[in-house]
Image 1 (tube, rainbow, N blue to C red):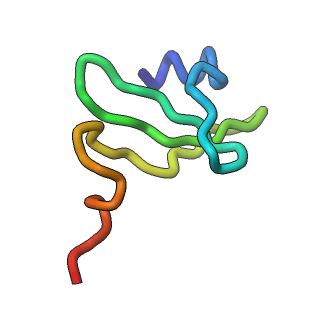
Image 2: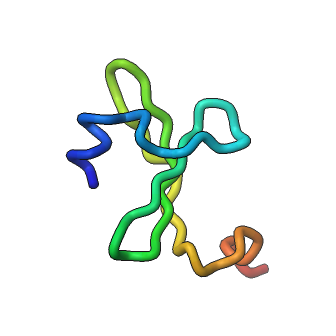
Length: 60
């Protein structure tokens, strides 16, 4: 997956957040959220795809 991002940084799908892209990691059910520039790729988050986005918040 890292090699794919390095060779094709725009391979992920754009999200509603400016500049953030999402890539599904197969065969594992994870989503990787990242931002790619000409010089670097920054991972902003990794989430199990079976979880609802609101369930990833820490419990109080």
